[in-house]
Length: 103
Image (cartoon, rainbow, N blue to C red):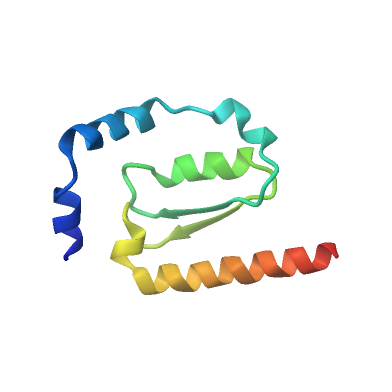
């Protein structure tokens, strides 16, 4: 099934409720207390969650890493799956190195 078909098959009430929940979810005051590795990825042309928001996350989460994908928008895994797969492999390798260095 094509991505658009799957997206359009969503229950509209559930989708609207999810959008409402995400729009009201604000944990910025707690970001500094995050004590887990954080990888932040955003499309350069993402208007729903723009790079400025991602930069703010990176600034507030100690040890986080930001990747801004040139030319991508909001649905990067659908838009550029091969590039996302390469980025995920880089993240996994980076995290593996940091775990090995802690031993």
